[in-house]
Image 1 (cartoon, rainbow, N blue to C red):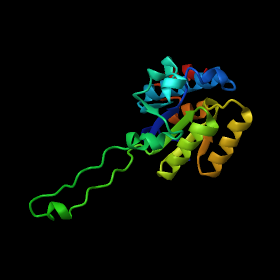
Image 2 (tube, rainbow, N blue to C red):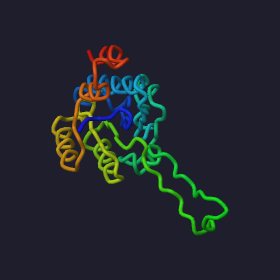
Image 3 (cartoon, one colour):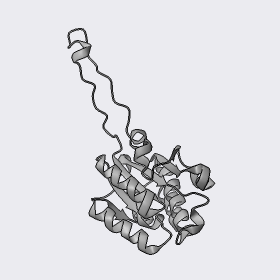
Image 4 (cartoon, rainbow, N blue to C red):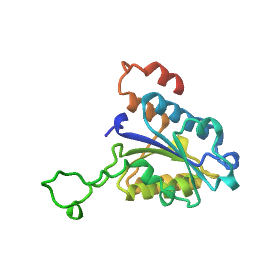
Length: 200
């Protein structure tokens, strides 16, 4: 099973100014998140960011924040509790019909289905906000793919424990380069050179 770029959204969790210096391999983790966001923008993949308690932890890195179409401020560790799933799904369609159809009070609205139900997710800290967000997105019936080299925690042990739990819960684990080449699928893609330049 490969990623299909037309079905994906990118979610980047909490790459915040006061948090990143404490993250193991923080500069590389952030650089990969920026690469993911730039690739997503080139290929038309929606990009969402989250910030945990930004009044205390600061905003996301500015270069990353400007690549997100929206950044959700949150207080819960899981961004789902603060409305992320609603952002990722299109609004429900209202009841439709004509004069011969059922009266309005008997009509049912069509439930929203995620047009892009595959979520490529990365973030910090991997064992707290990233983990809780990803697990709740899985519960919300999204397909979750976690980009391991764009995730970080203060310690490797916590980061790796998060990956173990996520894999056991059904998340796919992959790397930034894997995302790039699966989104492209072919060296003949018209944006191959631009995307390839981001990961060289």
